[in-house]
Image (cartoon, each protein chain N blue to C red):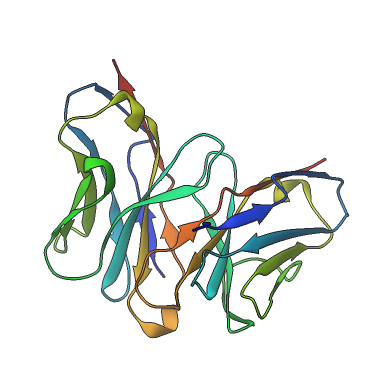
Length: 116
Length: 113
């Protein structure tokens, strides 16, 4: 079974400061890892993914994430947060095993509040 | 290029009724997945359709069923609605079942009273 943990329900950060949203995962095989963002009354918007290769993945809107296999983590980061980054962030995992199909398992989400 | 579209946007139903939600995938995508997002929680996988067949299913009862049409659009049907079925239902599409990201629609907000 695969699972995702996002240990922080909410992260508060001042505009211009670095932003980190934590994510750890558990899968039986090697993972595909994803970050999505959700704005109020909207669907999920893709930010970035780790498939293979470089452990540091760069995505949309200045976000990046670092895959750490030994710590089974995939933390989302942004060097300088904007007020418009305030939203709900979800980490998701998918097992590479073909039998796992395309199913994404999501964490519970972390609300980010960026204050001016 | 239209993204994933879902209809209706909002829906209010009574316990015991049946509901059908609709999804049109992003152009070029042939795989559709459905997720349920309860308030304050992450999305939960319901099932996935590819080549008009249910390929994978999450831990949801048989009251939840679906269909995929030749044009890749999909329907989610829920019978005998319970109060606990109140949630945001999200449709996601992708090109095949490989490692690519899934693109999500805006969702249908279902309220069961």
